[in-house]
Length: 388
Image 1 (cartoon, rainbow, N blue to C red):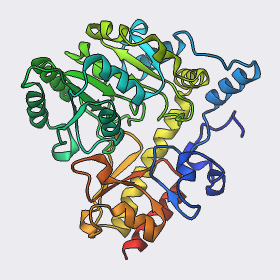
Image 2 (image 1 turned 90 degrees about the horizontal axis):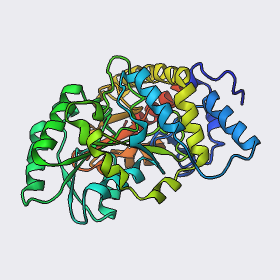
Image 3 (image 1 turned 60 degrees about the vertical axis):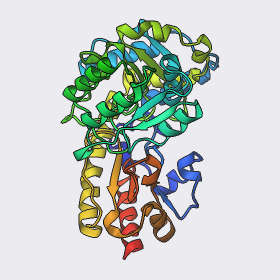
C-alpha cells in the first residue's frame, strides 16, 4: 500500500478482489458470492497518517500498555476545529476499551441492577444487548415523525421510569444509528431540560460524530445548556475505520466529573496501546482523509437514491446527513418483517435486518453506504432482481 497518496477518493480506491482479501467480520461472515453491506466497516485503505503512526510504533516495539493523555488532547483539538467546541476538558476524559464497553461502565456509574435505561428505537442493536446483559431494563421511547427525537414520547418514558423515585438513565445515540439523523442544538437542549426535570442521567454514544456533512452541524451533547451532568463516549473508530484497533474516550461534563472519577482504574487498561496511537494520529492528522471520505459518502447517498428510484421505487429512502448508514423502508415490497433475509437468499446481498433495531424496525433494513460506487450499483441491481 502506498501510504503517501491515499487521501483522494478513499471509497473508490479498492477493488472487490482486494476487499475480499480482508479477514474481518464484514468479509468472512458470508460466502464469497455475497456482497456484504451490513456491519459498520468501511471499504477504504487505512489513512496514511494512521498507517505511518502504526508502522513507526511497531518498528520500535512500542506495543505495551496505553498511557498518557495524547488521545484526549487530540480529540479536544479536533472538537475545536470541527465543531467549534472548546469544552472538552482533558482532565474529565478517560480511555476505555471501546464505545459500547464505555457505555456499560458509564451506566454502571449512574444506575443499578434492574434500573431502566431509555433508548430511542429503532436503534443500534447492542444498546439492547449490552444493557440487558448488565441487568438493566430497556425502556423504549420511539422516534417520531421524520425519524427525529419525539420529545413527548421521551418525557413519557422519563416520567414512567422515575415514577417510583428510582434511578434511570437515557442512552442517546448521536448521530443516530441506523437512521443517520443528526440532532439539533435545540433538540439536545430540550433533552437536557427533560433529563434535569426528571432526574434522568444521560449517557451519549457519539461514535459517528465526525461523519456528519457540512450542511448539518454535529452538536456535542456536553456543549448544550443542561448537558453539564452528561457522560459521553467518543472514538475515531467509525470515521477512520479502526474497529480492529480498540480505543475510545469517556467524557464527563463538569457536573459529572465525580462520576467519571469513580470509574475503576482497571478499565483504562482495556484499550489497545496501538489503538490509542492510531486514534490519536487519525484525529491529529487525518482531517484531509476524512473530508475525502465525507465527499465520497455524499456521492454514494445521491447514487443510492437514484438507483432505488429507478430500480426499487417501492423502497422508501431519505438521505440523511449523519453516519454512513442508510435506513431502508421496504414494507411496500411485501417481503414481511425481515426483507434483509430475502435480499440475502435471493440476491446475495447482506444487509442488517431492521427487526434487530427494536420497535419500528420490522420491514426495514440497514445498508452500509461506505463502499465503492461499483459495489453499491451491483448491490441494488441484485436487490431489484431478488424482488422482480
